[in-house]
Image (cartoon, rainbow, N blue to C red; front, side, top):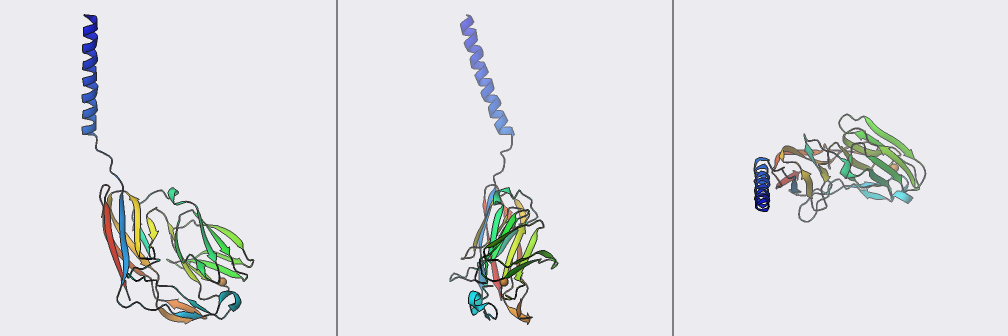
Length: 256
Ligand SMILES: [Cu+2]
């Protein structure tokens, strides 16, 4: 009799636990999964040629002519080196890493564009046997972000970046054609397009945001102290909605 009772209690217990589990699952909302934003930046119309720039200093190291590489369009019309930035959203940049670098090699910055997380460290290297003076200006107000002379070949200088926004780089050691851009990101949803203009931003929480496409200006509008002056950056913004675990497709089109 006792044994029969125990078995009955045990079975009732199992049923109770099972139905409790079922109810709990049904009542609790499933957490939403992050989504993805993917797309392409293309150029519409005739692609202007990158103007060659005559080198007038340190020709032995720098060469005699440099293409300025301000606008790189591939055969499919895709535009490389374009910043794609998700705005109005916060998120930890811890997964983006901390060590970033830029090299001055044959009087050219490498890479030409990159995203560095806020409080990340950018290590500046001079691979050339000439003096380079990297001068970074915050694009928004033209204030100096850093200004570092490197007279020694293979010199490395780490620079902590503590303010978000675009930084425009130039060389103050007479290499007027040298230019590059850095975006200091305060969220992990900023990338640069690939050579075919494609981009992917991953792990985006569901929501509706503004997505910004930012490309440096490529037309030479003037010259100052032998330094080319370029047209303003082309900036396009559009709204993007990321659904639960979904992929949002976005296209941007630049033009002259
Ligand atoms: Cu230089």
